[in-house]
Image (cartoon, rainbow, N blue to C red):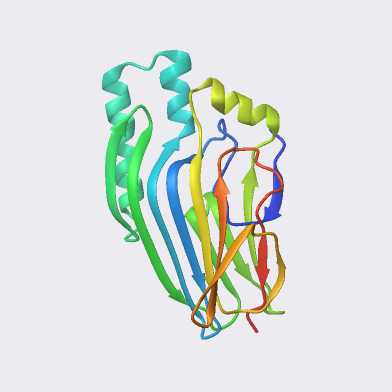
Length: 201
């Protein structure tokens, strides 16, 4: 069994051979979480469906079957109205544009892409702590992903005017009353894992 590390962070990674597994590729993700309760997530870029990449590159999945499976994955993504654009690029890769807006008034749970295939999860508990969990790759699993030709190069930005309980953002700058926190993601097993825990209420 693949061992997974869980940490509060804004990073969208999962072990590549899980039954439901999306991996980000080239991307920019922006998360906004504010005192007034407004919440938004944007993701622009590409992402790979690792189980399909594995079948294509390790098992030589026929082109016809690749096309069928890509179409099924596209339909599944489009069920979520947040996916404003889904483009099939082939070989298990999709170019997407995603936006989700919400309002946080009390306890709250958000997952991207699906609850049963989450690559990012945000939970606001009764104590008002906003915790973000995703699974990062071990060094071994990152090497396995690299052997399939998968890599990551992206930026995660968090825009917030909330007080922080914890953050290790290497970059930050003011934008009016809010602060923009930023991480550059270049490895699936990047350490230390980016993390941020704001206080909602």
